[in-house]
Image (tube, rainbow, N blue to C red; front, side):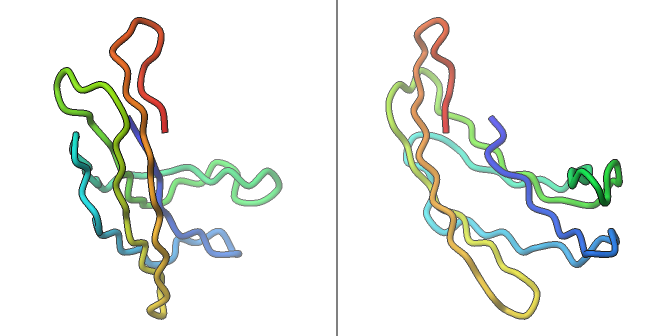
Length: 101
């Protein structure tokens, strides 16, 4: 499941430098991966429809795992500022339950 999209859109709709993403605390019952891709601007009156580089974070539960899992990403911004982002996921293999963040 996709758990985050990280991009940098400047006020003039140009793409800024990509954020740095680092796995700080690994998942106990799954795998976290970050892949490079593209995202579309979603600000209604500005930057609508532009496509910019992005990092996309994914979580995949271990085979046959049911229950809660956690992991933490560090997001690094230009200028050295950093922010921790903690994720809690609940996994159920029961029909109709799916995965949730």
